[in-house]
Length: 154
Image (cartoon, rainbow, N blue to C red; front, side, top):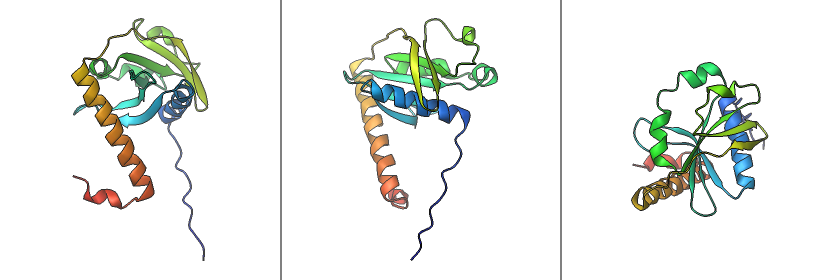
């Protein structure tokens, strides 16, 4: 009996940055998810839930054009305690707003260069985000275990 093993799909530059960011933040005690939708019209690249319950959002930008075409990023600020940009070592970092955090990353790891300013979430917003995080993580795990099982989700 032979089993077909699907080759992993190639990751895009932003996805490689996200992987490195997640690896770095996991080493700091954070649980990370990629591509979470906090509200209609927004999808964050990485959301991280920290050991003290803090919520960080990280947007990954692979080029100047990718950064300058992002018109939605300020909408992410109200959904996290801290906001970061993640870029590679060749990105022109002078483009990034000073009050946002900065992570230099590649596909294998990253480093926080500048801590983002803190804006604590209200308790009700934090509860919503933690529930979204948990639901998204559980559904993603279940989809890995049972790829066709998600068809019944509402």
